[in-house]
Every structure is written in C-alpha cells, then in structure tokens.
Amino acid sequence: MAAVAFIGLGNMGLPMALNLVRAGRRVRGFDLAPGAREAALAGGLEWADSALDCVREAQVVVTMLPAGKHVRAVWEEIASAAQPGALLIDSSTIDVESARAAHGLAGARGLLSLDAPVSGGTGGARAGTLTFMCGGSAEAFAAAQPMLEAMGKRIVHCGGAGAGQAAKVCNNMILGATMVATCEAFVLAEKLGLDHQALFDVVSTSSGQSWSTTTYCPVRGPVPTSPANNGYKPGFAAALMLKDLLLSQEAAASAGAVTPMGAAAAGLYQRFVAEGSGEVDFSGIIGFLREGTVAE
Image (cartoon, rainbow, N blue to C red; front, top):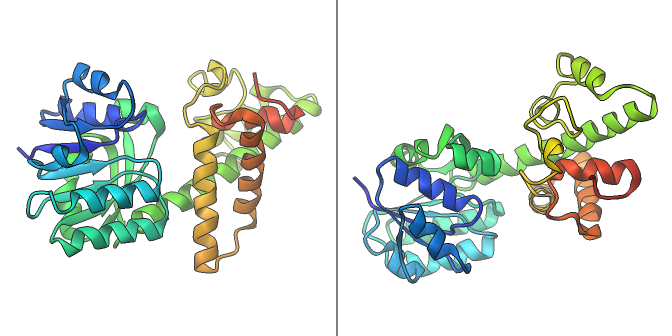
C-alpha cells in the first residue's frame, strides 16, 4: 500500500490525515506550527522533521497549506526529492494561477499532480465526508481516487490543471453571496415581525431554498447543528470566506467576468473581518447586517 506524506496539519489537514490512518495508510506528516508534532503522533501519524524528509519514501504527497505562495514554495522544494512517478495532491484553496504553476513544477520532474480543494469544512474533514473538486490529468485523478475516497464522500474530476480551484472559487462565491442574502432575509423577517421558524419552514421548502438555509441556517433554532446554535463558532471562519471571495474576484478580473454579487459579498465580508470578526463563523455576519455588531 502506498506510503503517504501529508504536509500541513492544521484544522483541515490533521483530521484528513487521520482519516487516511484509519483507512490503513501509513502516513508521515509535517507542519511548522507549534504543537503539530504532538497532535500528529497522538493520532497515529509518523513525524518528519522537514518537508523534504516527509516525502522521501512517499508514493503520494498531500499538501494543505494557507495560500498559493506556500504551495509553490513547498512543491518547488519537494518535487526534486519525491519518489519517481509519485503523485502530488494539493487540497489547499489557492488561486488558479498558482495551482497551474504547481502542476508545472510537478510535470517538469515527471510527477503526477492534482489540484483537489475541498468543500465541507472542519466537520466534513473529521467525518470523512468532504467533497473534492479535482483538476489534472485522467491518470492523476485515477491514481488519487482511492486516497481521496478515504477522506471524502464525493470526488469530482472537474477538468485539467487548475479546474479544481476554478470550481472551488465559483462554488464559494455562490455560498458567500447566498449566505448574505439569507441573513438579509432573516433580518428583514425580524423587522416585519415574522418568526424565524415560520420563515425557515417556508423557505426550506420553497423557491428560496438553499444550503445556507437548510443546513447552515444563520439564526438559532431551526437547524440545531448550525453554528448559530453554538455561539457562531466555526465551522467555516469569516476570514476563510473572505479569502475565497477575494480569490473569486481575482479570478473574475483575470477572466474578464462580471460578478457584481460576488464583489458585493466580498466587500461585506471585508468589512465584517476588519471589525475583528475573522474567527467568527461566516454565518455570523447576520449580526453585522442586523446592527453592525458581531452576532452573539
């Protein structure tokens, strides 16, 4: 069975790596963050003292890193040390240009590569129910599937290099704009004297239905598992939603696409995060829309 290197053991990466261990994979991990070593060893991962050391015996390498510059730097460092014919998978959410550059680094050294960002948040990472949006060759996708199936529920091949990141930014632009509209509707309902549950019962079964209402309802009560019922603890932090919305606007500018709703959502989340709410769940923007304060 292929040995796996996992670089980036944060809130998403560590539970993903642990699911690989539970699936019977030998996983060697690395992260620069203090405390990462102890958490990794406690979960059954082997530990490497550097990214280079992590990949030396691995047939598959997974990275989960903060931004495109980090992915480029790590892939440039590890590509020459990876096993011949190894598969490199990046599950970070980064800009399309950086994803394509990473593919280029891998291809120049004869390595298979896949950009495979995820949807599903920390809950999906822990439960192994993530959706993977994959960009790369058919050969790389086929090689990656068994690995991704240990960490996710739905694996979609979106196209060639960078297509996974393109799908991710489009999906999250929809999510950000939809959450803002959902929050605005619930705030309007409050001002009109309409009960939260009544609005939920209508919208969740009518034409206004969306994931933002039925799964992630931004008010207390209707969906017990939503962050609204847990003090707006993420979940999916507002700072991460802002990152994705800004990536969508960067992609739109590069492609010459007009996205006024996406731009408006990005502007609202920028203000929300600037007021100190970056670590609040992104559905907590309802408090900002309601009265200009963080939702409690």
